[in-house]
Length: 79
Image 1 (cartoon, rainbow, N blue to C red):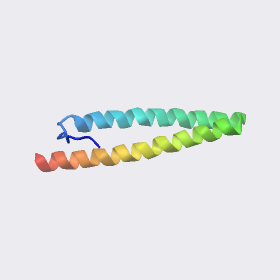
Image 2 (cartoon, helix red, strand yellow):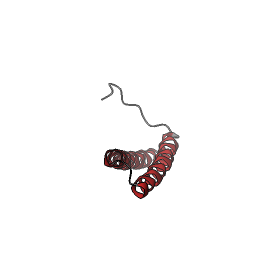
Image 3 (cartoon, helix red, strand yellow):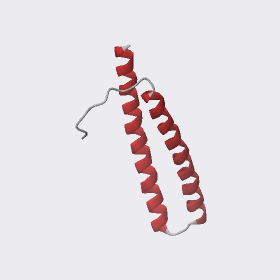
């Protein structure tokens, strides 16, 4: 945990949204790869690793989305 807490700036919500959009693009890329791998029936291990990475990306996106909502609430209350 950082020693100092920084107050979110006005554009921090926009920055988080950019991160979420980027993650959405990566998630879509993984969805396409999962579809291709399952269609071509490549090695089970690489398919499993792909699924695990995809699930981790979804989990991280949910965390970031929750943080964005906190930032937006903070900005709304401090405005």
